[in-house]
Length: 257
Image 1 (cartoon, rainbow, N blue to C red):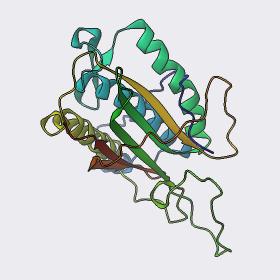
Image 2: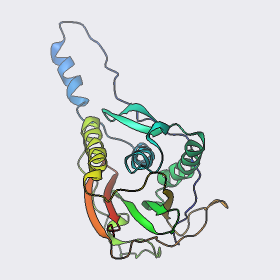
Image 3: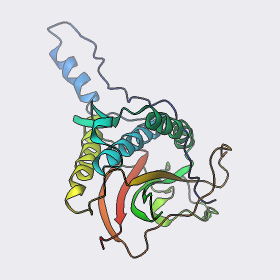
Image 4: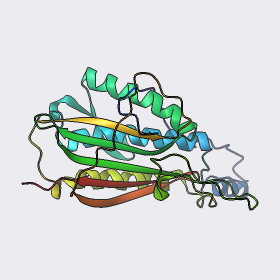
C-alpha cells in the first residue's frame, strides 16, 4: 500500500524516567548498591518503545521545519528535550496539523504498522521536491523456533525498513537512548552547513507514512507517490535504537542550480 500523505495527529506521550528508589536504613549500604545496579538499564516495553519513536518523529518534524526555514524563526519557541533546547512551532495551524499527524502515527507505531516516515519539503512555486528526510523503522522480533520464511506483501517495504526476525538489541540505559537521539538532532542542526539554502517562506512540507497493507487508514489520509528526488544527493545520518526498535535517518536533496 503506498504511503498516506495527509496528516492527523495525537497526543504526545512523554517517556517516563525511572526515578523511584526505595530508601533503606543507613546501615544497609550493600542493599542500596544492588538497587542502583538494577536501575542501570531501563528495558522499555514494545508499546513504550513505539511511543518513544513516535515522539522522536514529532520533534523531528518541528526541528526540520525550523532548521530549514520552512516557517519564520519567530514562529518557534524553545523547549527542553533530550538534554537540548529544541525549537517547536508555536503557530496554531502548524501545531494542529502536526498534532493530527501524530494521533494516527502513534496508533500505527504501537500496532507495529510503520516501516518508514518521510518529511518532504516542496517548492511552493514550482512544486518541485527539494528535500526528503527519511526515517526507516526496524522492529526487533523476539527469538522464535525456526519456521518457514514469509515474505512481505507490502510493496513499499524495503529490506532496510521492515521488521526483523533477529534477536532484540542489547538493553540500554534510558540515558544512552536519549544521548543517541540527541546526536541525531545535533546532526539535523548541523545539516545547514551542507544542504542548499532554501528561500524563506518559499517552501511547504508534507508527511508520508509507509504503513502495512492491512493498516486501518482514516478517510482524511490519501495515497501518495514516494516523492523521491531524482538525481539528488543522499546523506546518511545517525540512528538510534531501543531494545524493540531501530531508527535510521537519511536526507536527500536537490543540488542547487
